[in-house]
Image 1 (tube, rainbow, N blue to C red):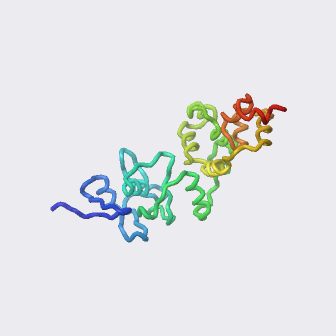
Image 2: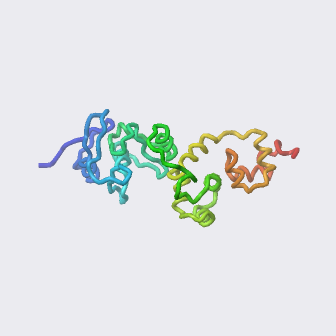
Image 3: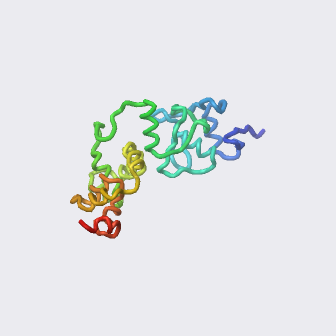
Length: 223
């Protein structure tokens, strides 16, 4: 007899026999009430998150739970955040998406870790100045990887917020309209465009436009 057990998720009903991936996934979750944590019952990564093979990749179980419950995929730079602070939980009502920096900020604000971050970490190769320059740069990842002596994937992780996420949060918070004093300071700064962009809330291309007077020319006309 066909198993027609249904799981009620985010207002929609999912028949387990309809999609093999969904059937396999939810069979590994201890289901409960909407306000309870739904614990992952199978293999886990070392950080406590469940692991599940989905769409050709070994993904964290909460990410798969969100995708299955909402019927849509997530961009690579987006991560799943737990409202319950329980890595093993796969309850869709306890999950929300955000940037890597948001996840880092959640972790720090809730006191989930005291691990050193950034250049204070014992395995860090880059400095904060290096990372700010990478974030401001518009060069290809391969070129930046060669320049800073790291793997190209590490450059990608930095840009997506999976690494050095605390600087991503700070960088996003710093994005605003430049003041006239800042524009003049940028114009007079003798550093490279990347170095200047790392010190001011703007991109390397904006620095170049200011220095060549293609942007904010009226502000720098008397300099």
